[in-house]
Image (tube, rainbow, N blue to C red; front, side, top):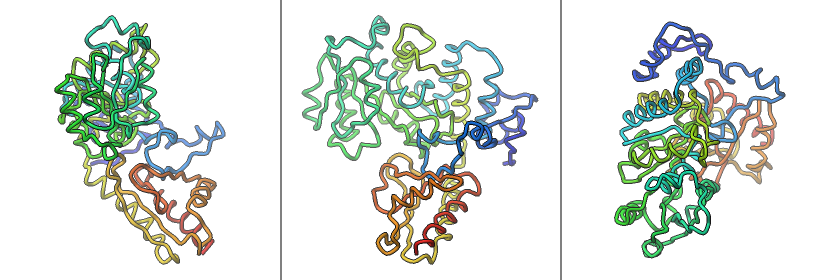
Length: 410
């Protein structure tokens, strides 16, 4: 694969570098596209008085998710150069994404959270279009969405905003008893699957038998790439993914995948349609095309080579920290969500007089700042470093900064 200079790249060269044949049908041509991103021009942020940081925390929304690769940026820029019917574009992009992934239907949303809201709206209105203009439904209608108590998260608000009541069911027996004519949907988060008492197969078995639509939040559940289709293949009627995490699409984009009738209902509940609960969830033509390019790229990506690259970044940091008193490291891959190799670093906090939270503060206070965080499934031991969001050469910077801080107290 040819190396790409992001500051001087043609549409054709970007596509040859891996944007995918389907995207090529839209973007091919000789016009030069300058792929301008914040990573290539930090002064954009410095003009605002903001210091760009090194992201060793992962694909976290508050830090900007992930960085779009050059071919995704090129697709986004190309889409910005023309006017187009957004309803038709959403349909065509959804068809291409669905075909590539191997699911029945797809649409681009405003992140996974936007997909949750629209999926809920779809479950409430797919049988009765007249309800679209009535969302959020009045409380006296008493419509309900079932979920396990272990599947609680701040994103529940996207469900509640449609005018339903969330009903907790802890066991299969409770689930069976709770289903009624008021039950609109069954909702779950894949990241909390291991914490519930009702397994996904049981959950889906009950839903199918009682003909209740299911919605699964799988926001950060790629990799592996097969996850994009496996949840639908297992029987979930709707699944949402973040577009700006491992897929490396626009940060404010996401995917809602699933049954065609439900995806079509979701489209009716959102922009550009007026008088809908999702009118404010506008997905631009640039984000639709950028998300399409991101999916095409991800499906063709050499995932084994990507994992090897991440392992090399971990090795650089490990090597830098060798022979520092009391320091040891361990590699870890979270079992669900953010399934990339991470590095856990351990040291004797009492002997060195440096606690893990203090390391986080010192890294953040340096120049450039280095952001770190704990991701779900990595426990609370040690100090966690994510390398997926590091740019070339930044593993060395992170390793040296860690080494300098640890040696200063050793």
